[in-house]
Image 1 (cartoon, one colour):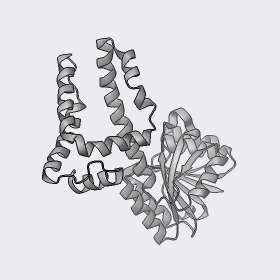
Image 2: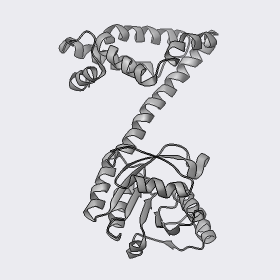
Image 3: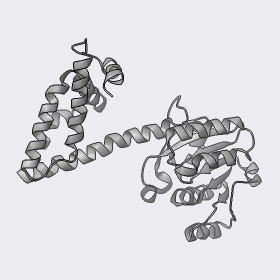
Image 4: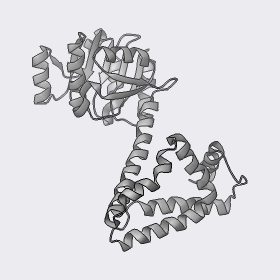
Length: 286
């Protein structure tokens, strides 16, 4: 398999090295190669092409490992030189909408396109870093990467952009939880009740995550007004401890926004299911 890697930052160098060791034919491309990129090329005995040109016609795959700001331009340039049926794997951090545009640009040249979201730290796990992928050609991508020790999870029926969308949504959840956990445990530690707090959260720990987050949203559209007051009380308590919250003001605003929407557009269902709750929020609670 002939694989061209465009962009020789940490991601490009990592996978170029792993794929070369796995026995694949490799081509390298970087407009302004760093000393680390030059060292890799010398070690592999390969030249570094300065741009995407006719030499890409030999490649079965192009791995785009550039910055997200040039993702679309690189996809368009590469597709113009690739043969029909070849595949672009876009490893960039470009937005979901940009990746969808990239897939459309590739399709116009009869080139397939895989949206790749890197779900961990390359410096830590190297080629074993989990990859979430969507688009046309994901099974072939998975097979190629597994020859080099890669870990790939495909999104069944997913289109280009879906992998990056899910990565961003996961970050919304995990980074929000991280910020909340910092404030929560700081307060608990200061009060000397951290171990007891874990006991009080045990019921949450024993609830499947999907059931728990669905329950939060279902009950939010019923109890937002009361809970907004509870959030305000919690803010006052943290402030009294000398640790004013950076997280809870935004939480309170979210609850108040829903409460105002409920006054203007009352919910007709006393116990909505998750679909009904989300439909109401998307129509009224934004």
